[in-house]
Length: 288
Image (cartoon, rainbow, N blue to C red; front, side, top):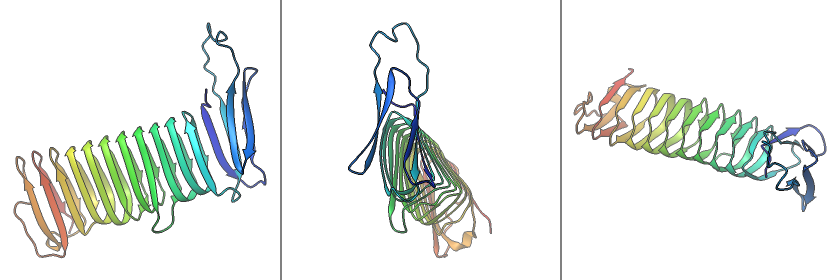
């Protein structure tokens, strides 16, 4: 038995406060051992109590943490949904089946891994300059909005990834099946993505280098700003517009069985553009 939802938030008080719902057959045990807060859920009913009933109750535990007093959050969420709000310190999070949401948090070290469930991050920061953050979801969608991250690795096996108005130092994405959408994203160095199935859509993305490789899926971009662009797809289209003049780029491109508006154009600029696809079309325009 597990909590349906765990809510952890920072507040301006001096003591950790834990509130929860319980009934005669279910109770919550709260203790502190070696400086670690432990919250255990106990299920005390007999096997025959629910033989002829359906239990649809939702059990919630709310943990309020004095801001600045706890520096390390090591969370094993099991199958519970968890929300994190207004927390500071370092985060190591492991979950099995359950959603996790984060808002207004600032973590120095960051590792978040769940087997099955959605991840939502809003108005948060993770890591210091030069550090790394890891986000992993086996089955579920990942949403990151208006947040700042350092060198970041995102692995999403089955599910969609959506990033909106975020900043990264470096960003690495490894996706097996699902669509990727970036909107108003700034990466100071490199975006590198690998995809098996799914489309990659970018709007107002800027980075020093963009490297994308896919087996099956289109890559589409609007107002892309980058000095080094390398796009490869086996069975997808490559289509979009680049913020820059065509003469600024040394261009190589090839489509074995599709149309290619770049043709054999090779210029003498100091930027690089490479686009390759086997069975898709290449349609790339320049804004200057």
